[in-house]
Length: 117
Image (cartoon, rainbow, N blue to C red; front, side, top):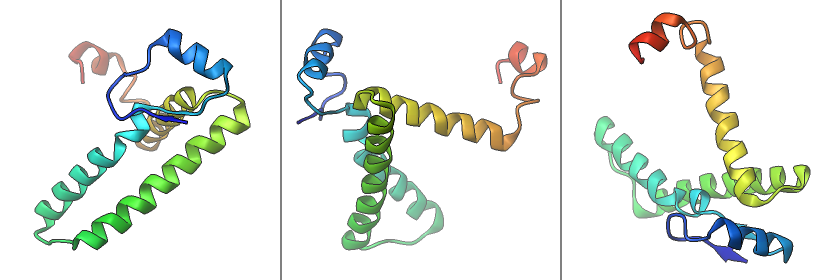
């Protein structure tokens, strides 16, 4: 198993070799998500004017990271794809769901495209 703790540390050629050897590569987009998530926690607390304990932060982070890892891992095994492709697929699905929840008429309107909104 390789966990990418840097941004983009594995080349495309290395991915091909590692996948052929059935080496599980936890991609940077997932491995580094904890830092981004905790930054979101800070932002949320600052806006609301409250403070979580370190233990609360760890527990919330653990829940989120475990859920996301499991979702991506399940998508990987179900579709027989590598974990990087699974992580990107999961991300694109979430983006699609967010756009769909807001409705697509405004998003894909010619006014939106012209004004770059």
